[in-house]
Length: 230
Ligand SMILES: O=C(O)COP(=O)(O)O
Ligand SMILES: [Mg+2]
View 1 (tube, rainbow, N blue to C red):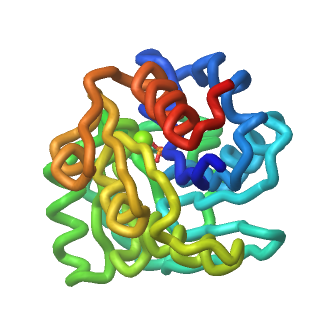
View 2 (cartoon, rainbow, N blue to C red):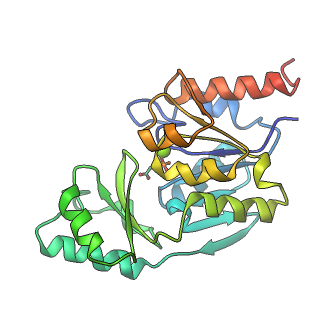
View 3 (cartoon, rainbow, N blue to C red):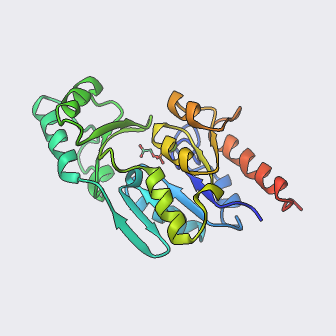
């Protein structure tokens, strides 16, 4: 038997240009254990991915703010605190940075995401003034203003509970600081070669290959290890 997986999306299942790597559509539909997609993206993105892979919709979205597992949706976090910080940031001249018709935040329920080109120093200054109600997480793809009490790792514990699987039986793969908490819950964790310093530090193994090359290599090793290779 192969193990259950907790998979980050951006930087882990994508190419270096942010597209879903086509190998996702070969390798994941047939994976013979639960897969939880754990992402900083808003709820519809991992749901759509799971749906079009023909997988059960087991997802952790918004860095743990939203989980949807075994048909149960849980919403955590405080969007008002996040939006208060972002409004203060805008009053001081900061820009969210997604342009008109922002689809990044349109369906976001518990946190706010800003473009990686946003003024980071100003954002951190304004967030610090909120006195611990929010934190800023840099995924390499966006800055997320979120509740510190919410994390992908907490979401994975909840997912494991609902799926009646030991959290430690999950294998996690990720690329950035929002995956550190996942790595702490899963029994085995891998950072792809493009991962940031926090993810590299937290992972059991830092892979030599980047993006989906790294992820596909882990999946092949897991299959071989469990004797499911033939
Ligand atoms: O939404 C982001 O900023 C990054 O998404 P990810 O957690 O799937 O890498
Ligand atoms: Mg990522």
